[in-house]
Length: 94
Image (cartoon, rainbow, N blue to C red; front, side):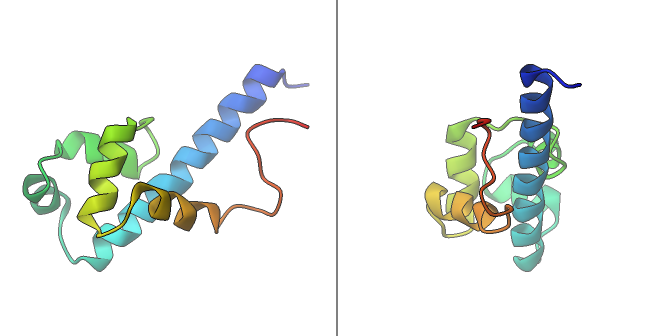
């Protein structure tokens, strides 16, 4: 049986993958490769790559820059991710 800490870690990893996938999809729609996108918005390509793969827990300031690069507010980007979450999904066990 998983501990609360293990469950939280799995949920975090899953959420970061969902976030990364959404960022990847938006970047693909912009028709920009990762290097050009990173250069234009002054983001390290290695950071963006890890975020898109769900391998990095992105800082809020970086997330805000990424959102703005798509013409979105940070909350709008997060709402796009949350729309794809299962009904009632939560980090916190109730």
